[in-house]
Image (cartoon, rainbow, N blue to C red; front, side, top):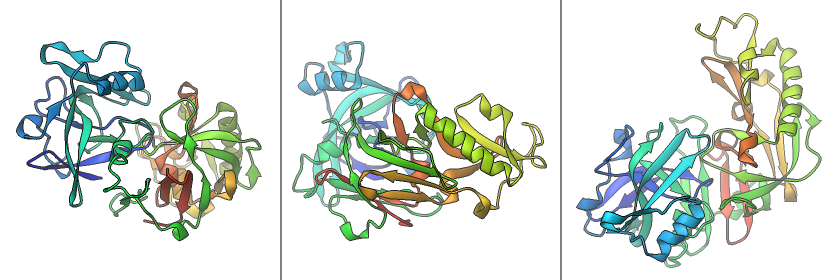
Length: 357
């Protein structure tokens, strides 16, 4: 998503993350550690060059709310300059950002709003974007701040589509959407029990014609997570069912992946050692099918490329995983790629659209 920050404006590309709340971009001066920001993500934002940029003071109500929502263990304050600070870590530590909170002007179309976001001074981030914008349910997420401007956002909803082929365009829509276009159906959307995010109720998981899930459970929608994480018991059933189906076409579970939280397969003629080259899988129509069903009758009948992907070092891998440390199930972005997904916060429903991008 492209955002225009400050005056004079700096346009940055940022990742949208429904699994987190804080919004941040890499800023000048990057005092500790910077990540390599792609040229297409725009220039590194410098709050010192924006005449509308203001620091968030340590004593402000917003700074106290930030500390509570991010569950920071220490005082989030840079006392010498009275600046509210933040720190956030993603997943198992694959990325983090530490910096100062600022408020600056954000332009959306022909309208302007004041946005509180993080200026990162220390960041570990392997993606090309300038930063991450959180779409979670806390008051300081990008979307909740935007919702405070009804003249800009007349209906509280957002929709997006992430393409399976990253060379093709997706889309991001803020506000009203085409209700009739959601041919995958609707399911109730609610605030997550343990996290400031949004969740669905998963009622069914069918793999290769076998129903693996028979009871309802919460599943967080996290556009920032690549893999879909399941409870260990459900993951074990999926592992067994898919492994049996894959063996019928000559593909077997790899020994290395057994030590990890996800599933990969190789055929006998493809197995050439982990330092060798693995021939990419291409017979997609031979793969077992998966479907996820949700409360209210909405269902995701997943194309094979949403379930499997080629890993040059592990073989053919699944986009499903288990991660008991998360204490929750996660609907990740690989599964929903090419689907239009709509978070209708105002209407408390979540919609799917097939082949949207």
